[in-house]
Length: 124
Image (tube, rainbow, N blue to C red):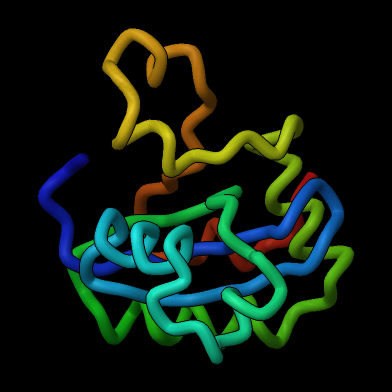
């Protein structure tokens, strides 16, 4: 994984399932927590929302928090379109940083660069 300090991400329970939008400074650790239900009373644990289907990395945590808020205010259809634009098969992108480099190379990357303005425009 790149040495970034802020991630905005979307998790899903399955294709077109329950969605969760979050922000973290350590995506690998946070995905471990989601997948292992380390917070058993949390939304993601209750609904088994643990597939990383989209994320954006950056260096500014405040920008990541603002992006999270913008995404949360968008419609479900918009979020699904955002996911499917870069990850049409709803692959679990967290496997990119836990599997071998060979396996990871076969998976799509939904990491976006920039300050997030690309994310908030309507998906194609």
